[in-house]
Length: 328
Ligand code: GYE
Image (cartoon, rainbow, N blue to C red):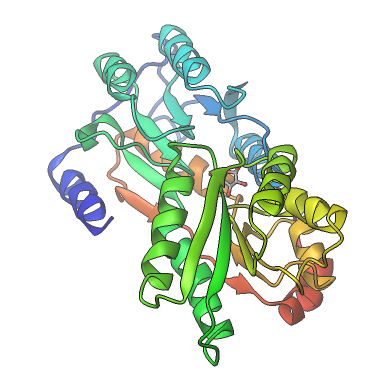
């Protein structure tokens, strides 16, 4: 991860922004009275898989409106091929800037090269790509998912600090191959790996959805006789799992301790109700920063190659305090 960040920083220092004027030869008003040229952004969203995603979509759409940016928006329904199609269509339409949240990390070089050849700057938002050539995008705005996984692990280590018994953990992973699934898994494993008593006895994808979270947890409950802890890579899968746990006659938050990531309202409600034990926050409100970066990038201004979202964590007591003011 550190390697990746330093590579990004290096790329930022060496790569001069290519001024983009993919606006299709529209009228040029730059320089008159300091008015900005109208900007069109093509945005390819992952899908509508979770409460986090819904809040993120709203943030992007509202912020575009507030910033006076024309937004072309498409929902890829969690399929990479749909995102590639959307990006190609934005290139054809000669938008000024493309932003997207890549569903998985790999397989983007070809289409990103096409955008680069068309001189359309690309901003990654929320999730990263694993392309070696970091000049293929201008910046990456989003959370540090490894840190999120570590925070989840640190809570668990603290929770069981006085016990020497084995702790059986089941893990519900996010979408296979996605940055948040890869990194949340890695950060968590690193922290709990320091103590042999923590054992991940089953780990499977629930695709970040409530339905899949429930289904996979039902299977875990059948195959694992003694589960102490569930670590779910997002609230929605955790909420689905709670239904499965209750359905099996167990008490979520007590018989099985639950850690999730996101802190969307439904998750925070379950935390305040004692059904979840700890949530690591991941903010979906990326819209305002995204629009600022887009304006700069379109003007050819230098931007930081990595913008990390500021986030916190919540215990049950903290959830009770902030629940009424939670925006999403
Ligand atoms: O945690 C999950 C969503 O990429 C950070 O995607 C995002 C994740 C988020 O489906 O709920």
